Amino acid sequence: MMENSQPRFSNEACPKYYKTSLKWSYIIFIAFFIVYSVSIVMFGHGEKFLYVIPWLAAAGLSIFFLDHMHIRWSTLVYALISIGWMAYFIYTYGWNCGGVNFMVPLMLISFFSLYESIAAKIIFVVVLFLIRIGLFFYSQMYGAVIVLTPEQSMFFQILNTFAIFLNIAIICIIFSTNIQQAEKHLMLYNMELSQQAATDPLTTLYNRRKMTEIVSNHIAANPDHAFCIAMGDIDLFKQVNDTYGHNCGDQVLKSLAVLFVEKTLGLGHVCRWGGEEFFFFLPEMNLDEASELMNEIKVAVSKLPIVYNDQVYHVTMTFGVEEYDYRSPLDVLVKQADDKLYYGKKHGRNQVVF
Image (tube, rainbow, N blue to C red; front, side):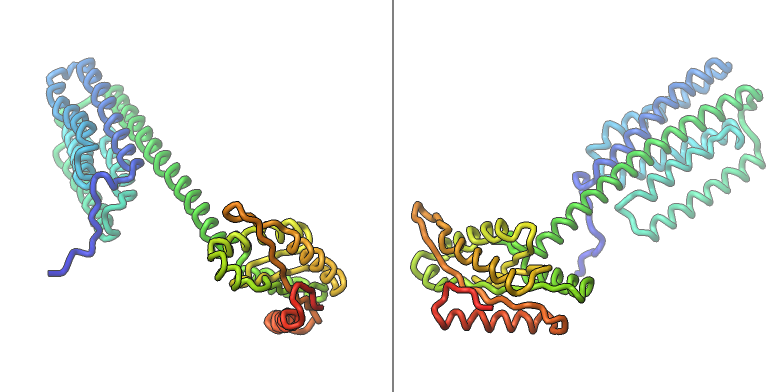
């Protein structure tokens, strides 16, 4: 048997804002029923007070069971109370007393529901439309059970309008606030994902993809500006991992990353290119300036104490520096810098080749 593809939502999964909007709608209903009850007594129709008690009880019980009832049932109960009261009010006092306005917050609640398909919502709107048309023609054919004075009719119109507008305002505030919070959370989440996608998780430096994007954008925006790149590789790094373990190797990479950021701050960018290899982007520098900076970094690397398990280690690095020739693509520049790097590896290590 195939499982139903429609997601199942438990009451616990119901968004808090949705239950809050229902709860406030019920509170407004209760307040409305109380004011209405006092009004009909003052208007000399005290016998109608008994008809309000079931609606008042239904709204009160709905609040009580809101946290214990499936959200679909809660929405259905709210719809029944709204439609039932609207029908009763129009049946009793006629069309012109504003009873039909109770349909508006019901439509808002149904539209913002996360638990029904678009087709179900459209069907519900069509049903509400047919109910409204039916009530209108009924009121025109049979008239009101109780004929109100113009002053009483105006009072009910104002009372109904106030209650409905208050309900609509609260629903809109709750849902718009939730949408703003959701957009803020989504923006922060996207920023976090973007940062993760551009960052090496071990060293927190840029990764190769992000650095390639930075250099490519720089070339596109400044095709006539000089810059240099440098490739750096830790000498005999495999021996560090084999002798002291990969955790020690990770500590080496993280310590060097901190040093590189300090040395290139305000001068350029650095990324972990892969493994024990690092890439340096040095905008607005010629070959001599870039080589001087990389020599400073080389010396700083050899002097850097790397502490791991209460032991102090030292490593050296070899660098290859290449200057932009205003025509070669980035991958060609990287290949040329890499060739210089490995030339330095074969001829003594711990040096800068330019």
